[in-house]
Length: 399
Ligand SMILES: Cc1cc2nc3c(=O)[nH]c(=O)nc-3n(C[C@H](O)[C@H](O)[C@H](O)COP(=O)(O)OP(=O)(O)OC[C@H]3O[C@@H](n4cnc5c(N)ncnc54)[C@H](O)[C@@H]3O)c2cc1C
Image 1 (cartoon, helix red, strand yellow):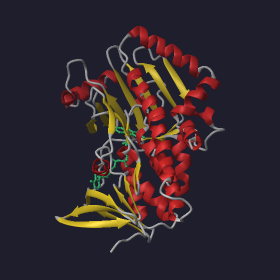
Image 2 (cartoon, helix red, strand yellow):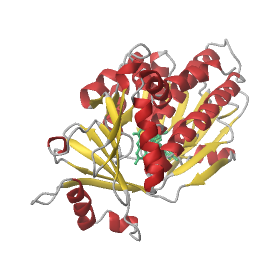
Image 3 (cartoon, protein in one colour):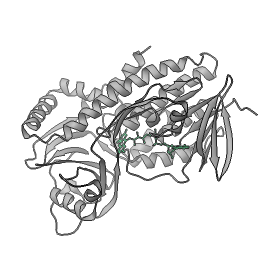
Image 4 (cartoon, protein in one colour):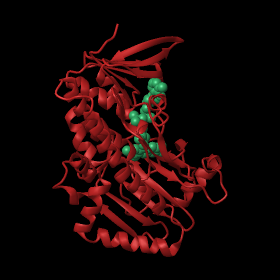
């Protein structure tokens, strides 16, 4: 029997679950499947930008992000050795957003919260340990073929959303191209609870720091600091994440007699890619399934959240019969342009700016950053892009 009275979503990451919440809240039944049996607690997204915090208020998630996270009203570029810095102050955006700050809150807290809260809806269901293995569609419905404990089943719905991450099986089975590049640098993160704020003068909640030969970041999440690590020349990522190397990394930031407690560590390949299209008939892609970018600047998940809001709005129109499936062509036009013109462009510039080694070029960058942060109009222009307010407004203008 075909079930055309629901939407089937592959992937219970942040983007699949935000789609599910918004649709269930609109009265549209949803079934979410995820191949995992537990919610991963890996060290991926932690930054929530102003535009996203404004958006997520509607589904009641912003207050939870604020409760679990740490507000960062400023962020900075800095030379470690001299302490010279350029400080970007998001408060200049207070006429543009209800949240003129970044919030640092780890992605897994919000995924866990979204998964739990979905059970408040009687028209929403999540099936864990259920892996999408194929996808298809006909004139009336779309389906996911899934496997759970060795059993195969076909799950039909009026539409299918592929929110199944960067290695999306939905994208692959549809034969949608996913073009771009893989960065040479591996992204590495380590966490410690050492209170750097008491020992390192003038830190912001988010800090991008140059050392003589390298660079690192320090991001404040409640009760701990996340540090982005760059291997020393000649070091492999595995060596850079070893106990001794992490110890040397943190000792170089603040020397101390005791060893640092490393609470978690992780490494990730970094890509910049975009799907050829985000819609094929009744099957839609959102989040990392549709686009990937360098984590520098914290844009990937935020861009995916904006996809989710744009897409669910259109699904509502199609569900009620006000629009045909061709409305999703506009979804592709809008969100693909934003992935390329904003997420890719901004994160790529951040990626290489941070990794600049040449002292002369660094000096030019720092002088430019100080010129911008010294002028509220220029700083506002910069932050309208990095805080993703411009990208949401620009998407709305794309017909
Ligand atoms: C180190 C690092 C730091 C980052 N920091 C930030 C940041 O600060 N801010 C930001 O905006 N972004 C950041 N990102 C990017 C962010 O983590 C991703 O953009 C985000 O996780 C995308 O969410 P998603 O729901 O699309 O995909 P995912 O989070 O990958 O979720 C996909 C889900 O689909 C499930 N799945 C996969 N295949 C199948 C299948 N075949 N069947 C069923 N289920 C399946 C998976 O189990 C998973 O639960 C960072 C990334 C990294 C690596």
